Length: 244
Image 1 (tube, rainbow, N blue to C red):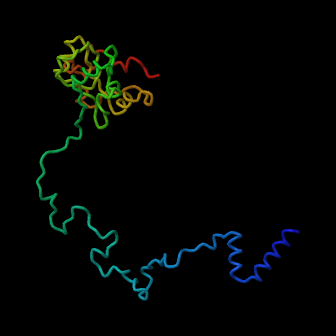
Image 2 (cartoon, rainbow, N blue to C red; image 1 turned 90 degrees about the vertical axis):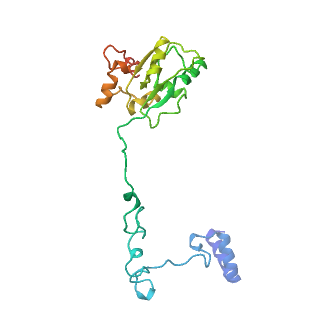
Image 3 (cartoon, one colour; image 1 turned 135 degrees about the horizontal axis):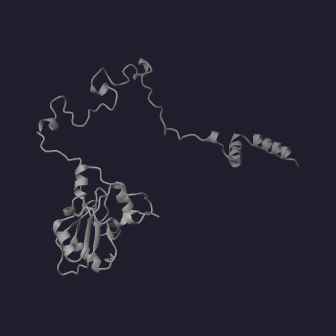
C-alpha cells in the first residue's frame, strides 16, 4: 500500500470519529509552533502612552502638567542636590590637596627578608630584584605601588649574608646594615611596564625606560641614594642580560 493511500484512510477515520479524536490524533502526530500559546490570564497588554485622550494615557502620558516628575529622565536630581540651597559640599571649607605626582612604594622590612632567606625561599647567592621579591610572596603583589622600598631595622637574632639587592629605594638604616654585612644595594627606577616585566618576564619584553621626571633623575643620579645612574655605579642585572 502506498503512503498516500494509507494517509487518506487515516484521515477518513479521524473525520468520522469526531473533533475530539481529531485533536488527539493531531497531538499524537506532533504539535507545531503554531499551537503554542500562553496560559489564559498570564499576560496583559502593555499600556500605550500618548495615543489620544480616549486611552486615559494620552496628552501628558500620565505625568501631569510640568514639575520635576514630568521631566524626561528618571525624575530624580543628581546626587548632592539639595533643592536649590547651597549644598553641604560647598559649605564646608577645603584644606590641603592631593599630590598626583606622589608615589607609594611597597614596604619590605629587612627583618622579613632575613626570615625568608633563613627559610630558603630566596637564594642569597643571586641578585634579589623586585621580581624575585614578588614571586617569593614576601609582599603580596605590587598593584598600586611604584616599586619596593627596603626598610630597617634588621633582626640581630637572624643571620644576614652578603646580599646584592636591586630595589626601587632603600632607607638609610637598611642600606647601612646590608653594606656592613658585605652586601651591595642599588636603587633602580622602574616604570609600570618595567614592573610588569619584573613580575612576568615571559610575557613582557623590551628595554627598561629611563626616568623622565626631574625629581626621579636627581634621585637615581645621587650616589648617596645608591642610584644606578650615579657616576661609577654598577649596572642593573636586567640591563646586562637582554631578554630572550
